[in-house]
Structures are given as structure tokens and as C-alpha cells.
Image (cartoon, rainbow, N blue to C red; front, side):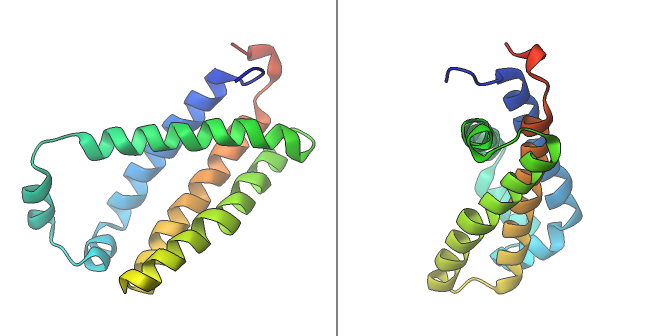
Length: 139
């Protein structure tokens, strides 16, 4: 990963993870309705295992590292171009993939909108951070 600003990637990953906490707290009732479970059922199934949070953070870092590889190749590096790249990539790769899966799984469109919306906003935030990070802070 030569030329990748690892600090910007980690900050972007943490920002995505924090956004997820806020997003799914704000939309918890809609999300629970979309997955067809109650909070009690989910808590009983997961117990006190932090695995979903570990997976979410690892996934955020993977996406951030991918953006750090892609954004410089798409053109001028700036916060605005990074934001556009993050949003564009989410809208052409994440949202359609979720839609395809949700269609076959007979999941509600409201759940797709919630999850695809989160990834679209999250990748926009990550792209903004990665695209706008000044190179002199490279690690």
C-alpha cells in the first residue's frame, strides 16, 4: 500500500464506524422492523459478544483503504472530489449489490434504503477525509 496515507484511512474508518453508531441509533426502530426482530431478540442472539462491532470496524477500514487506493486515481485530490468519489462508488457498487441481495431475500425496500443510505453517507464522509487530507501528514 505504497503512497497510502494510513492516518487518513484510520481516521476515515473511525468516522465511518462512529457514523454507523449514530445512524443505527437514530434509525434503530426502523432497522429492527426491517430485519423483523425486536431488540430483545437481537440481544439474546448476540449475547455480549462484540463480534458485530469488530466486523463493522474491520469493514470500515477495508473500505477506507480501498478508497485511499481509488481516489488518487480518479483525479484531483480534494475534499470535494473525495466526497464525490465516495458517494459515486457507494451508489454504483454498494447500493445496487444490496438491492440485488435484498430482492432475492425478500427484504423490505425500507431496509435497503436505510442500509444503502448509511453506506452512501459513510463513504462520502470517508472520501471527504481521505481526499482532503494534506499529504504532508503522510505516515
